[in-house]
Length: 322
Ligand code: M7G
Image 1 (cartoon, rainbow, N blue to C red):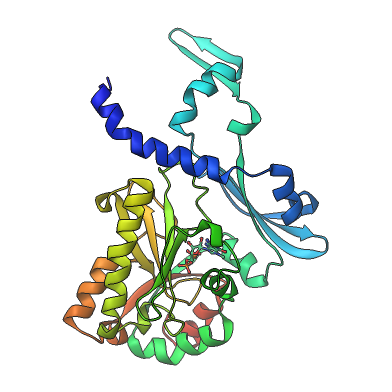
Image 2 (image 1 turned 120 degrees about the horizontal axis):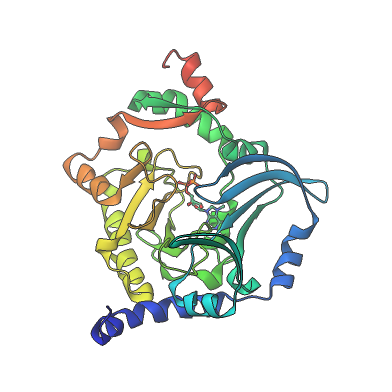
């Protein structure tokens, strides 16, 4: 049973939760109108998961290609009293000590997180389509000869990143900024996180420098930048959300989807998509590797998984590397 001391210790965390929740409350009708979600005409399900309780749908909004992602969000502890008090219940079955119900909470406790990408490119549609995956082992030379020419011509636009750095979008969501041109970055909630509970906390730190595409771009010259992100990012998250560094997984993706250097901060309790060993590189390991060898990421082989329909996979195949 929780003591009053336990409760006091948890209060800042709860306050952080509540604070964010209240700040994020927006008039639903207005938000829907802005993104024209109600005009979405679904055409096919790209992927769905009963376990993750999400579905990725390809369709159209006013004749424009669109991808819409629907996701049921975790149940917040601070809403439990209200859920039990205000929901309607219908008994499904009862047997001995066991019973199951259909519970219908009021609509504000029953939201579906909705992400809209419109206009969506063919690459977006492919990103979310369920596909067989293959592991690639990319040497430093493979990066320079195969991957770099490909990503220079084919990668997703990073306009959304520039909009954040230039405060043209999501400015009100920034949790912390170090404006320094060399070691500075912007820390804000990833759009996968609705900020309603800390269980699936997910923030990204986006560097101000525009010359760093990915892990492969890094040398020991970038250590001050990486150390700064680790130190100030962790400090800002502790301050804002009362989540200590030992509860966070801090990493870079290789390959990323967006080739502008950024670092992921996710709750250790949350198995974030892309936190597996074939994609996530812990920031602390990256720092140590660069401390030991400035050109570690220039030469070392890096493994990652690619989907069957990924054009980069085709290039590796054509080069006889698969
Ligand atoms: P990534 O490693 O390049 O690729 O990470 P991934 O999307 O395959 O993981 C980019 C991160 O930025 C992801 O965690 C995305 O969810 C997040 N992200 C992408 N977009 C387009 C936005 C956006 O517009 N705003 C915010 N806040 N996050 C985004």
